[in-house]
Length: 345
Ligand code: FPP
Ligand code: MG
Ligand code: MG
Image 1 (cartoon, rainbow, N blue to C red):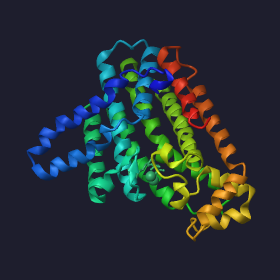
Image 2: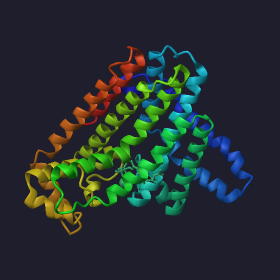
Image 3: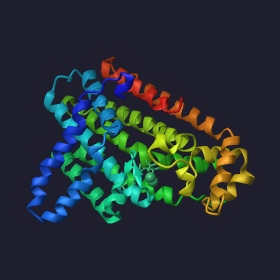
Image 4: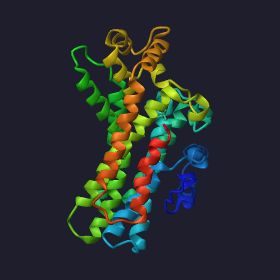
């Protein structure tokens, strides 16, 4: 984001702030059971020591600024401090879900580095994720705002449901392709977009609480996060077929190897149902299934259609925030929607 001249507020301090929470907690957990506590804290901190893109926390902070400016509350520093906690929690929930995800996906690499599970083992990765999740939740609780607590807790619920929907995604033979695509989009909302939607909604609620009972802006913020989140995952699903392992920091065509039929495969299967359907159905499990599916995707319009759909969702995200008064933060939110697409241009 920084490279592209968008200026998210407090980008430089975001990682530091999250690290500070871990430093703070370190002292507490040490008094319970030194060895184990040190280990779980180190495990939990692992991904915060690498420089991730912080897309989620930056998006959340930009939304906070844009909505506060809209309501004339941009100088309320205490409000912004609370919104910062939401942004931190968003990044921590995301990181926690990755620690669980890398166990489920048997991934050795994350962000170009050895994953937690490959360094410390699967149990540590699960506990590291649980611990990070607990820590983030206690930060959100400190805000003493029921609406925000409810909104942020929906993230945890959605992430787990999304993962379960992904696991059970082989379609019954009777399912229409439109229905199946809808299920893919619902899964995508839960797995990826929910975190952005509920985090954006939560910071907007914090601003709205200062002004009165109207929740129009937080609904709008939710929709922005939802649309951009779906676009973000569509881009990821596109990249999985196109980018090489080095660029991704993780293996390419990994989804097929995991048995997952994402948007490019679903589109390709509408064009070449006889070839693709059996492969989807057996989750690309037989030798050469993944290679065959890859070839079918490449000769189909699946990748182009996925890209076009991602563009549509980005446009829709930009459209959502049109009612906001113009501000630098609003401009940055629009730029962020464009940047999501930059990865596939
Ligand atoms: C990455 O997807 C994973 C997610 C976006 C969410 C995973 C959620 C869980 C494992 C449920 C547990 C959740 C909590 C609340 C701790 P991916 O595997 O497609 O992407 P990748 O290529 O980055 O691994
Ligand atoms: Mg994974
Ligand atoms: Mg996964």
